[in-house]
Length: 386
Figure 1 (tube, helix red, strand yellow):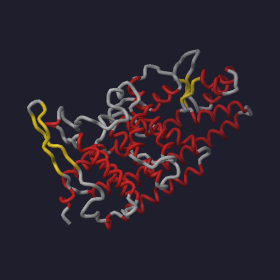
Figure 2 (cartoon, helix red, strand yellow):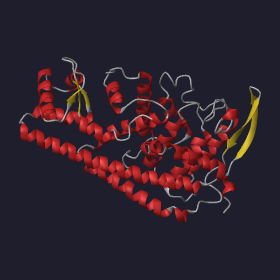
Figure 3 (cartoon, one colour):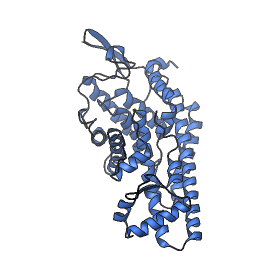
């Protein structure tokens, strides 16, 4: 097999500042010569088993929607960190509860927009197939912030962009020129819906991700949107019943390998190496998410029993249940959300603090903020900014 036949073509583009440069136009998917599936099927089987275990795990969660709520936010933080933001999960949760505490506001708004884009996309794929129209709609949600407002939110780019370097002439990679984008995207959309292509969905998603990143159709947000598309396609195709699989932790932990694989596909046509890397990420991420779900179930059950053994107060159990959805809790907003009085809330939180379940983090007498720290620690694995 000559993998170099899969490599796209380079077009010499117009001079910018006295310097010409080459743009890359990928060949349409699927790769030709076809993938050597014999080397990939064992990993596909292992990945499908890991996803099935994760998907089934959601049935044992006390409230799967709470887990999904928090996991989407973890993914938003991780995916945004790959792009250089410095926000933490705690920052995002405080921001969503209208508390700032010196948070880098532009960073956390960017992460919050990722959450909005994720939730918007998950709603829309129930109504529309994944299409260029839907991708543009999701991009508009993703870029709905101060940084993204000048980057043509919801519109495919009309100017040249590049990856790495200070200009196209010294960039690591220069995507297709704007006049070629719609042709490339048309082929991309056709690939997503071509029923004649008999490939396992996981492999199809792996191919689609690289192709989207190679086309780089927007001025900004391509990396984040490309990672969102992985989950959207898996949900739309029925591989996932619940949106629980997110690869950003794996891609962040293997950041250089990730970028090297993307570039290697373009330079050598070695799609197999990328698909192997991707499938290993699906396996690792699914197993890690399953372990996290198991640990959260065990923690919440253990803490509930601890509460029941130490107190007869229903208010404490109500507060503990609320903490599972809001592990960073502000007394002011909890009072607005519940039917409990402020004195009852404070007594309940004080009891939970004595049991070692929560910690107060402000040291203030008023407007206190409590953290369900063990719960949050389980979700925050891998969330140290780059």
